[in-house]
Image (cartoon, rainbow, N blue to C red; front, side):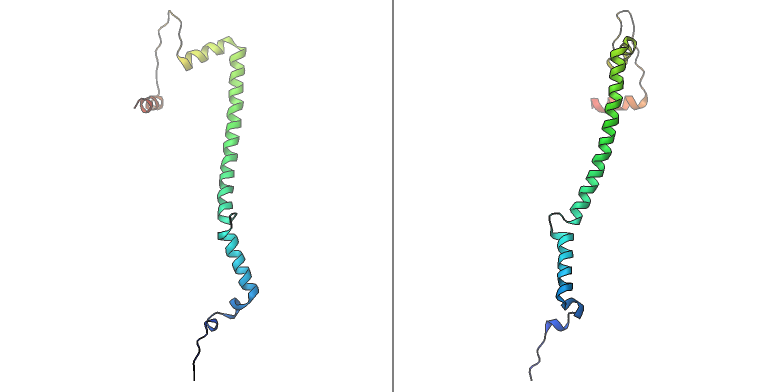
Length: 113
């Protein structure tokens, strides 16, 4: 008497069904193997969310810069104040004293190193 060992006997009956097997293969394909798999889609959605936040920041920043530019173009007092603060310009008969906060001092030290 010959004893035949059949591998299909160890597989549960639910996995022998061709429909269940097809669904399992499809799920594995969609989750891992496809070029538009769920992992890649999740990463893309995260990046899209980050880009939307960056877009809102830059739109806000552009609006602030437009307001500053408008102020500089319309008022000479603001233009002089901006030139003195940003570019450290001074009149010929003035002395200029620069007082830095600790944060500004650290920024300058980091740039010089």
